[in-house]
Image 1 (cartoon, protein in one colour):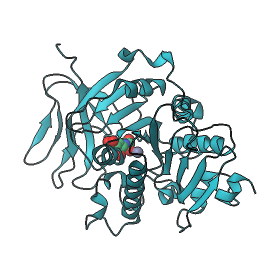
Image 2: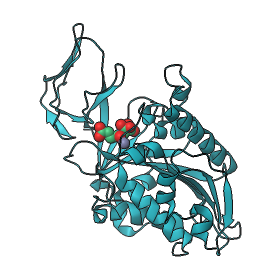
Image 3: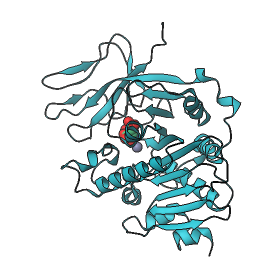
Image 4: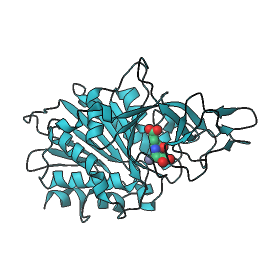
Length: 349
Ligand SMILES: O=C(O)CCC(=O)N[C@@H](CCC(=O)O)C(=O)O
Ligand SMILES: [Zn+2]
């Protein structure tokens, strides 16, 4: 039996296996690859890969890569699946431990962002709140947290990075961008900026407070260098132009193989950095959001523009232009309707 059929039975690959077993309980399975990498299928859509200890971990790191936390954001899922196929076929030899996650298999099958509740608001313990804990997405978020905790603990001597790969609902004036979760007192390491540039991600948003996203959990609780990375626009399986995702695919391939970063990503001036200045939340009755439904990400608003209001309060753009990211009025009360951002001032300016 070949490696793929030992892990995935009659399914052609990891993605097909994940879609075919999205609602199943499957046992943990461990198999060695011919190059002695150990592959553990921890659950549906969750693989842990460990290179043999005799192989140097050149970058001294461990990586968590997730996609499909939103089920309809298919391009990063396809990219990750391709990388897994390459590893299993022996075309990509990994040098560092990997935890690879397809976040929400039932939503992937349905082609929906989520089924019951947005899984990317359920981390950092939010999955155990009474209003969420009955939903399958809460159980999955709790399971992912546990697996990440365990992975981080077993590799505590290594630098841990987590890239949570997404695509956006709206068109975007900046096609690819990353969000850096807020952790008091830290700065984005230059090596991470270089990785983003290598992946064709030339825009970075600095969050202003900790949240309940997957990347916020891994950075706050596990001390990982984590990013949510938006790589393009949401499209159904099979409709992605995967050529537009070659940057992230090749950058991850390089990290998996433990190679050093290409010189082309060293010009950090190519990275435009924004800071989040305000998170718009749905405040319930009387909430009025003045950004139209078809506004692209990074649409700019002049100083003084009212972005939202309700019967008690409002938010106006400050004395410099600000832009909107992730505008979406169709969220439950209390959840994020959008982020208001502005370019970070260069120190001294
Ligand atoms: O396009 C949209 O409105 C949402 C795209 C998306 O899923 N973005 C993530 C960002 C997570 C973060 O803030 O780090 C999300 O909304 O969960
Ligand atoms: Zn998403």
